[in-house]
Length: 308
Image (cartoon, rainbow, N blue to C red; front, side, top):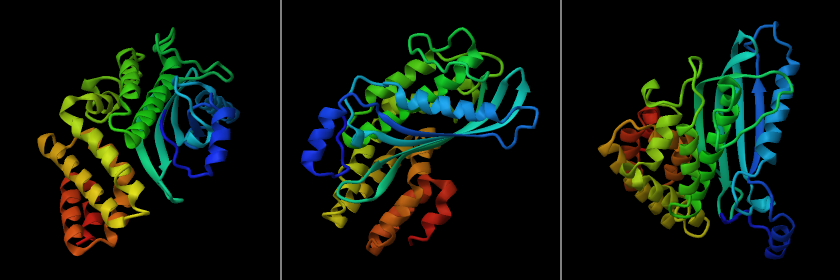
């Protein structure tokens, strides 16, 4: 079970633990936006879909772990429906974000932030939203593709969150995501599950996260959060030093295998936070952080240059 750091009195936590031992893992907020879809589609369809997806994510038990209400993971799924091909078939972009609290503070840190650019799915209003990890593709690939994609990201969220609390704590959940990739829906309208479809998709993210070449990433996640952010309330210098060491581990990954999706996803979540962490650091630390970050995260290089 992941550890809670929402810092409520211990007696209250104990009461919550007994009352909500079976609580679901997520506190998810799903938004379905369909401004780009023409008037040929009744907008009520997307309201119904949004309600059903919120129920799907929040009411399902995703693991065998016991979560209290205070331990549930806050996350957002923004589904931007961009077009329809008729016959209740849609294409959408999905933004997925997750956060966790930082020890002894009101600060919330982002653990996962990604944009999935091309998710095709079929939806008829009020159809059931179902996911079976033993039969991911289902009878209709396009009907199964949206819940399979969301389930994949649920396990990525669970994995990143648990990695931030304990070393390699996320492995069981990353393996669940891998199982979904291996059994994913297939069809000419569906993409994102296969290696040959690009170097920034669901396949490559789960491949990177479980690849032995990137073992140091898990150490960096633990070091960054538990020995970095979580100790900064008591010792800013010690916490910042741990984050700097975590960046050193990530730099080693970058030097071995540049331009990986794993590191791109990490910096999507952390770029602005890293600027804040090192903005008040001593000059030598600023320079070291700036140099490493500009090498690893080129899209945000101009931001990091401000640290010098």
